[in-house]
Length: 206
Image 1 (cartoon, one colour):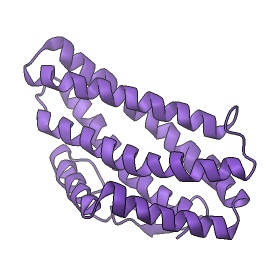
Image 2 (image 1 turned 90 degrees about the vertical axis):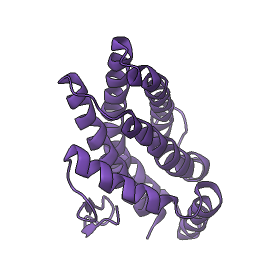
Image 3 (image 1 turned 120 degrees about the horizontal axis):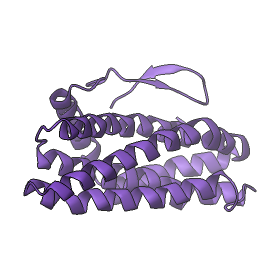
């Protein structure tokens, strides 16, 4: 698949975690006690899969290739996406920092968990949509086939050398487990991917 199709594919997994976080926040606000380890797992997923893997491919590979192809970094979609990546990291840090206090039943920590988790959900939902339907189609238009082939190979290297063997499988299992707990859908491999480039629908491995 094209590099952008791979990134779109990863977005569907990230959206599954956003659904889990949203339901966890609903339960916390309703007075239920959410397992703090679930929040810690969500933070790990975001930091490793969404940030280190997915955003790493964008920031280190796709975006620089787009800039070389003539898409400005500042004042356009690339700059906006980078700013949102930074904001997302701030929110995830706030969530991670609040979890120990939440585990100890501190009321202020509970508010911080919800504030930061909801902030991340509200940020990433529109962020993903903009990338799927604006940024990635632009990349497909301006990047020559040879560059796309290079990016595909570089993405594979990120998976092997930076993320590590078996990490995707572990996160796949985590998403299934948390979706079962929080009763969010879809579970397993039932999620459909709407490909912004090919306008087709295909099942997701996530």
